[in-house]
Amino acid sequence: MSTLKKNSFIVLMLLLSLVVTACGSGSKETAEAENTANAAEETETKASGYPKEVKHLKGTTLIPAKPEKIVTSFVGADFLFELNKAPYGVSGLEVLGGFKVFEDELKKYKIEDMGNPLNYEKVLAAKPDLIIAFDWDQVDYDKLSKIAPTVIVDGSSEELNPDGFIHTFTQIADMIGENEAKDAFVKRYEERKAEAKKNVEAAGLTGKTALFMMAGEKINYVYSGSSTKIYLDAGLKAAPGTDKDGQIDLEGLSKVNPDVIFLAEDYSNRTGAVEKIQQSDIWKNLKAVKENHVYIWDTAALGPMAQGKYYGIEYLGKEVK
Image (cartoon, rainbow, N blue to C red):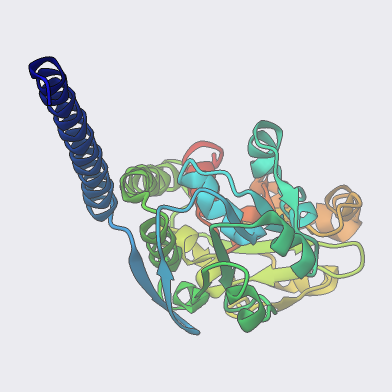
């Protein structure tokens, strides 16, 4: 081999060596970058509390990441609203629209109607990250859990104490990673409770008998127990014979004749029942009516919902006079 050819060969081999080294270095750097990114993502996920296991009425459900696309019932929507979260889809959306307290949220958010009863095909098409249902919802857990992680919330805590909904609220806040919003709500709620008690006393209604009712087209309902206990704890006293939920007609109402009446309209069928009952002569002769202690509010105040209860206790603190 001539000296020129020999030198050319050596130069060529050196160049090839540099190219191979550069490629190897690049591949190594790329792999290291990918590993670093994956590690950072894993650290961020763990720091956010996900994946997390949630124990519920049907067992344990693994939620892999912070859910953004949630399907729930109208009760679940209430809790999500108070956590500054809009559900993607709601079963019973038209029922939610029956409560005036949700007017702002329903205008603000675009929420898909999941049917009433729940339409499983719509849920499947929605491809949610999480499905939240309650013990009173008649849903097929096995079918839902095949679509997305599903949690069946035990709402019975509402029956155990006046703030039972806080327990439910806490469960939901934890599963969707919104504990700060939950804590802020609880703080505001406790402040409203204190204000309500002061206001009831200032109005001279402490110890006065109160009846909580929902007027319907054909039937009127009396609410009691966990539905009304937070309001009674503000200083009111349950009217005699109203310690259980049940129906009541005008004659029965005249026998109870409470000092104070909180009146709402049937949220599922608004037909002007409140206005109609107020036209009755029996109604006009009730003590609460004569003394101007009838308060017309939204039925949401009597339900197991966070926003509803907050609305109700805030109402006592501002509107009762």
